[in-house]
Structure formats: C-alpha cells, structure tokens
Image 1: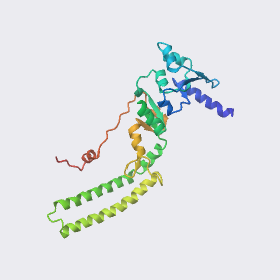
Image 2: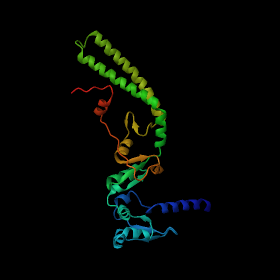
Image 3: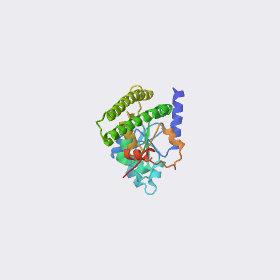
Image 4: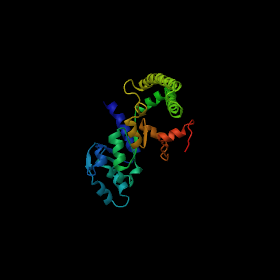
Length: 266
C-alpha cells in the first residue's frame, strides 16, 4: 500500500506548492451560497483541523492581512466564497475563473450567484469533435438537401402567388411534381439524419443537438459557461494573459441575408 500512497502524496504536495490556496471538503454548492460556513486550517502533516476566525482574523491582521493569514498555512477545509475572495484579495467575482465538471452545481451556481467566470469541463467533447470531423461530408449533404427542400417550397409558393391561373392543369402538375420531389428528399434526409445521429450514439445521438436544433444541454453551456473544454489541462495551452472573446451570434434573418444566394429588397 505504501507504493500506491507515496506517489499520491507527492502529487498532492506538488499541487500545494503550485497554488496560493488549497481548499478541500468545500461542500459545494453550499460553498457558493452559504456565507455562514466556517473555515478550518488543515495541518498537512497529520490531517488535523484548526479553527480560524475567517474574515475577522484576516481583517484583524491589519495591512496585508491576507498574506499574513496564508503564511500560517494555505491548506483549508470548508469555508465559503467570502473566505476565498478575501484570501486572494479579490473584490469582483469576474476575477475568478471557476473550473468544474457539473453544469448545475458548478457552472450555474458560480455564474448566476457570484458572477464568477466559469469553465465547464465536458470529457465527452473530444469524442464529439472526432465524430463530427469524420462525418463532415455527410453533414454537408444533409445541409444541401435541407436547403433544396426550402428552395422547392419557395418555388411552389411563387407559382401559387404569381400565376395568372393557379388552378390551371399546368400549375397543378408542377405543384404535384414539387410535392413528389419533396417527399423523396424527405425520405432520403430521414435516412441520412439517422445515420449521422447514430454515428455519435446509437440512442442519444449528438450531445449538443436535438434533431436540427441545439439541445437543452447546449443551451445551458452556451448561456452559463464562459469557456468549455474537454479537460482542465487544456487551459495550460494558453497563457494567463490570453483573452477569450465570444463569437458573433446570428438570428435566422441574419443567416438568411448572409447566405450568398440571398437578395434583400426593402
């Protein structure tokens, strides 16, 4: 057992040395919402706990109280977000990037309650991206067929609106042909969409999509996670000075006008 424990202790020690503050047993999500949770200092040598007066103790230490408080030991158990911000000498929540793998307990709580920046860890993302990349040709075919259905619908609507005699046999024949072509495309699309769906998962399909729309999961990720990635170590690929900016979003009418085949007439 000593062979297994020692490497873990070494890794733990390395993590402690690399961080300014280490908090264990934080009892989230209560840590993010309950201001009355007590903070205990941990003695790493034997795991024993020592009482602290938390914010009052930091304040009582006077100027540079946070650093003086941490000089006595920087490993803690429990507490709440007020203790963390005081120890880091942070006034605004946006100065903290909270990294978590639980959408509701981590991302929503830290973002909505405290205004912290949030990074959501989605381990499945790597496989999702791999499968997506492998099926780009199929996705393009599906997009082209859906666009073709729209064009057929627009053409049929134009025939009904602009024809001098919408009830003529010629117009009826054209509309009938449009309906038949649309039915064929619809069946083909159903087969291709099923194939695309099953490539991600035979039952649930793509994690971030439900049919042709964003899934509920994707909605929450987009609205509450400032960043999302497959693993926390990916953050190490960027410097601490890197700025991440949101991409421009488009409503349906914007996407329509952005299409190369669209024409605008006021």
